[in-house]
Structure formats: C-alpha cells, structure tokens
Image (cartoon, rainbow, N blue to C red; front, side, top):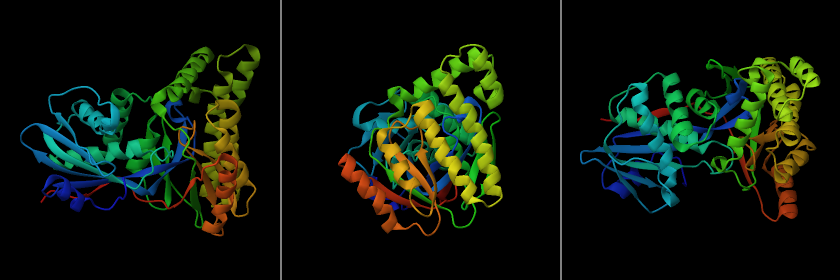
Length: 385
C-alpha cells in the first residue's frame, strides 16, 4: 500500500463509482509493556501518523469485492461464503474477521460491498498494520450501514476478530491504541478491565523507527508459544494471570519451588513494573528517566523472553550509545521487525543514518528509517451523503 491519502480517486478507478464512506485508523508504536497485555498487565502505546484507510460502497447482489493498493488483483467472495482466504489474498482475513464478529456485538454485517484499502504503514515493522486494518474496516462497515458502537466495543470486536478468526492470540494493545489514540499523548491500558486513559507526552519527545525487514510473522506460532508459556507459568504460580503477582512475591515463589517458564514470567512481571515507572516519569515530564526503562525493557526481551533477534539487539546497542537518544527497544511482538528509539529534537535524519549504515555493513541490508509523530485515533473521514 503506497499512501494513506483519502482513497476516493483510487476507489473510483478500481470500481467505477465513488465510495460511500472512508475510514482511517492509525498504526501504533508499542512504547513499553512488551507482552504484558494478554497477561492482564498495563501497557503504553502511541498512535502514529501512518495509517490504513478503507473506502467502501455497498452492493445489493451479495458480492464482496476487495482490492488493495498493493495489488492489482481483486479478491471476490459471496456474503454466504465462510472461512479464511489463503495465498496472496489473505490480507482480507482481517476485514473478514471483523464481519464475522459483528453479530456478537449486536450489529449487522453488510451483505455485498466494494472495498478498497490503502496504507502508508510498512508491513512487518511492528507498527500493527493488522489492527489498523481491523479498526478502519469496522468503522467503514458501521458507517456504510448507518450503525455505531461505543469505542470500547469496537476495540473489543476487532480484538476478537484477530483472536478468533485470524488466529493470533494477541492482547488488546494494538486495537486499543489505534482506537483511543490522541495526538501528543500515549494510551495507557490496564488490560484487566480493560480500562483506557491517556498520558501526555512531554514536549521534545520524538520517535524513530528502524525497520530491519527481518521476519515478523505472528501467526507462525512464536507469539502463540509465548502466550502458552505465560499461561502455564501463571497456573504453576497459582494465579489467574501473571499481573496478579508482583516482582518480590514472584522471586519468593520461584526460590521456593521450580516454576515452568520462569524467565518468561519474570519478564512479564518486571515489565509491568517498568510500565508503572514510565508513566510516573512521563507525568513528571522526565524523558531522561523514561529512556533507561525502555532500554531495560529490551534487555529483558532479549535475555528473558526470547523474542529479540541479533538484528534488533545490534540496533539497540548502537542507538543507546548515541547522543540525544533517551532509550531504545524492540517494538511490537518481536521475533524481528523494528526498533523504536525515543530521542530529543537534536536527533535528526543525518544521525539516524549512522546506525542504519552500521547495520547495513554488518547484515548486508539497510533498515528503513521512519520519523514518526503521534496522531489521533481511528475515525470516519468521509461519511455517506
């Protein structure tokens, strides 16, 4: 997908008519709280100025035609069809999952429609293009059919779509940050509720993303394995979720008897404590205190949770040694993808080329470098006339 401008022109080119509704949903940066969400903990994320847009117009014949600006190929289905799509058209499963979940949330799915998705979110960079697709699709389906949902319900619907239909056992982070994002703020999620609030981002904070292009495929089982390991550790500790135990109590119980996947549990429990410390530092306007918490988060992902890679570790090492960098960590599920650096305004594109060039020299491929700003959350940008 090549651009997140309103895709009315592209829609007309593809389908020969104007869209009835256009919805936008941003990607997100996972600021801190790696794999804490499905463990009932807290997590901080920021919605970004890269997004997915979905343009939609209804049909009366029950045909569902999907098109992406990344491909000239249409995916055509009937409203009565069930199941997922495989192969090159599998990207439509995020929208199909939303349709599959709508009845459970008391709203009706549209029958036939023409659907176009455009985006400037890079795939595989840990910026949650899948959740953005789900939120934009959900808003478009609702808008075209004259329906609405409370934002909490829409976020829950899209999470269910990814969990149940797509098959990724993610927590609520991605959908919630895309749904509740606010410019110049981070979204704080207490995943047990879930409860959502925003935390002001101190002036002078900048996000730089270094996309390694290494593998970031959550459906391939690595994410699911970590989820399973955390649940097994919680059961062995006698708690419902790892968020139910603090660092000191965890250490005491692990000293008393062996705990399966103890390193995974330690990462999650200590990561929740880091989220709380980061919120306090941000509310105090102290980026210098916030940055080391991000780097500590990465080291824990690297040594305890096992979801980093040599490429990600290299970038964190390089960035941590640079001036104007407060901290750096992998962002997203891990197992490849991207590193986020929190910097001051003195860090610029020329400085970003230093770690990018060193990475290319070592690994033979140059990472994409993105300078991101925060943005508002998902919204309908063009309603039916």
